[in-house]
Image 1 (cartoon, rainbow, N blue to C red):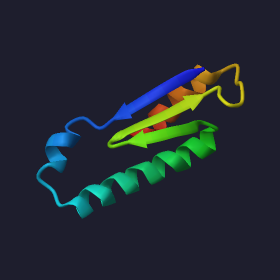
Image 2 (spheres, rainbow, N blue to C red):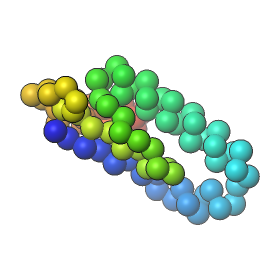
Image 3 (cartoon, rainbow, N blue to C red):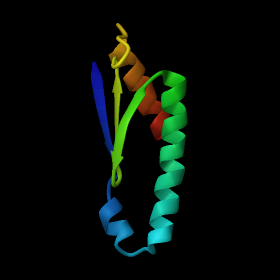
Length: 79
């Protein structure tokens, strides 16, 4: 099982100078893309806490190459 915690660098400082609606729109658009990638890669989204996206591969369905799948998921999220 491989777990990924994705946190947006500088997000707290950036969000402190923005309107709440701007923060929501940014996070919603980013995490909608992450969710789409997760579905395609068969990665399970555990939850989102603030600007931290938590995902796991190998649970609830075991996958022998979970680390490879998670690395590809992470790469796709960065692109």
